Length: 443
Ligand code: ADP
Ligand code: MG
Image 1 (cartoon, rainbow, N blue to C red):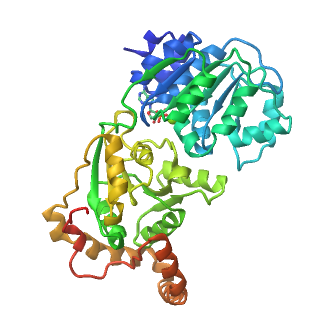
Image 2: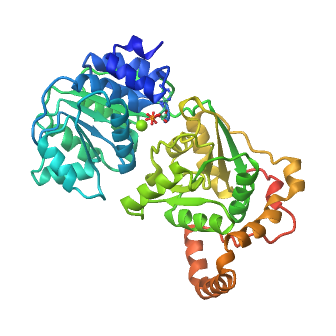
Image 3: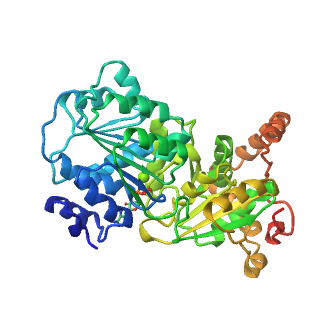
């Protein structure tokens, strides 16, 4: 099967070739022909399987003919996060380079002026997050009555983020006889209901069992004492041939503290979480994409759907509370046919969470065995202090003193907070024996 078999135009095939894709992914192969035939469609496929191009490509050909009108976008793509919206916009630019299409991106946290100007001149494609779109709609800055194609992307994420009521409102503002496409990694009942209500006679495509993890990803769980997580992470970062990694944490505070700690140990670490404003998040993402940092500590919401090429590893610093998050997290690696590795830290108190993950993914995740060689090398103990010193050389005199003072002063408050959040203290390597190397059974 090649892209040429799918009924796409020559201009588009050329752009696809330039992008370096030789073969459509299964969801692309199955979705593109019915979308080109203007059918409604439900596309279910796990994260990282190329769902974006399965609607962007046919949309470009569909929109190639027709006229733009002021304030009335011809098509609308809803995305749950700003980052995903920005990625879809990038896709339009990449594949649409041989077409005269105008696009606007409406996302929270960035200046709206230019986007409003573009909208008022008329756009073929509007890519938006539901919140910002509702905001604009309510202020009468946009008309959705000319919008004949709607894409609800990452529908299960929309659900998690509480966007379903907004989507229902938006759907009711669009013309009834539009084409509607819905994409999701999973199909929970609420999404099914949404589809029943707003899609008409849709073609249903499911390329893999929902929430089945991608087979290009080697998965491990790592039995770890909560207090040793950072140490184990550093060990794996050094020994598992990590080129780029995303480290997921369940809480924003953990993301911040972990990134700080990794930097102290000489790692090129960045962070992305919901407390950062949009420019800061995008800037951090750019640093990661450019290779200025190769380890990105992330919270689920901020990292949702990020398309960063060639992430070799995903670490779940915390076992995710929601099993669906597991699939989304590890889907950041093993993309576009590449191999990836995913490690999930499981502390005794995560027994129930990991059980739910394994129920959803349909099998026990193998326990990671630390090699005897790694044990004899004691890498954490050897390297950490050296790297730390080198990294902080310029302020060697002042920084440690300041930090010690701060730590002492804040101690009562910090330990109280940790207790509340079940977040362990980790003040670096102390013990002579790398305890985590003797893997204990998960309770
Ligand atoms: P999803 O939305 O299903 O999670 P994306 O659309 O973000 O997945 O695509 C995942 C990755 O696969 C991206 O890096 C994308 O560039 C790449 N990709 C998409 N289609 C192809 C293809 N036909 N061949 C190779 N890589 C592809
Ligand atoms: Mg996607």
